[in-house]
Image (cartoon, rainbow, N blue to C red; front, side, top):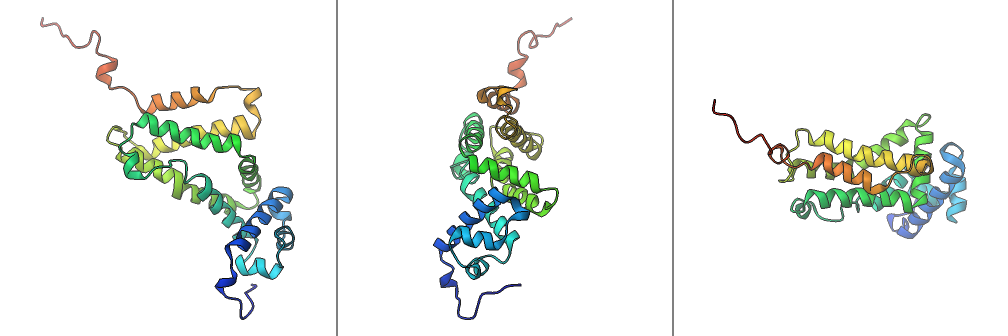
Length: 222
């Protein structure tokens, strides 16, 4: 295992060099795939020495996982955009629509994100630890917050908040994959609002007493 040379201290692990290595790593992984990318290639792309790369990241896998963590932090932590305490006071229709639209905006306006997702899916068979790292980081950010919201929102009475959160996220991700990653929007076109509206209707239903009030509130006295 490579270690930093004596005399190299944390002060030399500058944010600028870290960012350059991450950008170089992203460029190489997207261009050559995980297996074909080497730390030598990353060093060249980042315009730093190979020793500098290894002083920041132990190996290629740790670099890739750091990219996953950065991607999740930059993209998915902002999906809610509001503190948990404030979210709980907002109408579910507003919270869920904002969540779905922000997530879908990532998939439709950021080609680098889509390409990185393709890379993770494509390499998951040979390198399952990479896919697990992505799922683990998503679990700790967007999904966990959505599950917390479904559990504690006073306006929602869900029998299984965790399963509901998975259904909601799964439908959004499926729409993103089919429409954008698999280029299905020309084959199976569907407006985003139809998906989002239907998901919200499934979760935020009117009370049964409102739905079945007509003809059900009087009983024959015979």
